[in-house]
Amino acid sequence: MPILLEEDAARPLPPMYRVRQHFKQDHLEDVEGAVRAQFAREEIRSRVKPGMKVALGVGSRGIRNLSRIVKCVVDELKQLGAEPFILGAMGSHGGGSVQGQLQVLHTYGITDEAMGVPVRASNDVELLGETSRGIQVYFDKTCLEDVDLVIPINRVKLHTDFVDNIQSGMCKMLVIGLGHHRGCTAIHQADFSYFGDTLKEATRLILSRAPVGFGVAIMENAYDQTLLVEAVPAERMLEREAELLEICKQNMPLLMIPDIDVLVVDQIGKDISGNGFDPNILGKSLLLHEFVLPVPKINRMVLLDLSEATHGNAVGIGIFDITTRKVLDQLDMESMYANDIALGCLDDCKIPLVAADGAEAVRVAITVLRGNDPSRLKIVRIRDTLHLGEIQVSEDLLDVVEADPRLELLGPADPIV
Image (cartoon, rainbow, N blue to C red):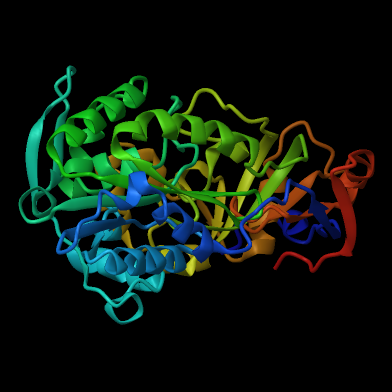
């Protein structure tokens, strides 16, 4: 049965045009060289002794050059005589299961064969204590009992659900990633109004009890290229991560079209952002009430697909107005629900209206617009919030493109289907 009236279903969609958004392009040309330079620092290499068992925390984010960076860290530790292994550090991702965590790591090329060391996952944790607000803090049991050194490797970035001077990064990996499913669930009992304070307090507790030597911070530019790799001593982790977050803000991508009737997003996924998409870019969130970056005004949002690496976990889908049958058919409910229950925000996984395909989804979005002239539509299409170097805009936005020196018209785009 058709979901649109005949005249709405037959409405022609406006032609779309490819547009380049210009951001700062600074990035590392030699990623491995940057890692080796960090291990050449005496304050870092002196923390690694021959024979040490070293756990490298690696998570579920789709970080550019992640496997190259991890492999280089492994090689540097081996040269110093240590015995490293890789440990999944992703909280409730991968469905919260050991096999699911390993599958996520393997998707990123983090395997025993590729890394030359064991790649493990675990859900065994130990309760370290509670924060001042009574939030329980858990940490990986192996790292507490059978490891000489713990090194979290993670990207420093704005978080999707709270604002503070530290957000996503090494500290969050220690608290949530290496707290595994139980620790992730426990820490998310903290209200997001004070989540940053909880994260910092829990980090201090972990650093006082676990053998964390240093972390490896990764930063990316607006083109999803590696901007920086830095080894940060444990005692400076909180301070330095706050400084790195300020650098992050200056290198984040933006959506430069200020007023949008319909935003079409090709894909969301856990490899793109913990929330499937980055609310800091779209200005749409079920939890964030303030945004530190300029965000557009968006009326309706359409989702066309899921990323392959998200393995059916569509957390974040709840913010969209319309999606497609293709998305619905890919959903892994168990993985998505396990993640969302741990986060405590069930609205994130609510299913929006489902259209047959992308074209019908956009027509539905146009039909339900209020107070808009259907002959003058401001439609924007993006791949996802990690890749904003090139976007698509409808004909009615060409004057906005022409007026902004950061935007460059490239030519016609394929129609939405």
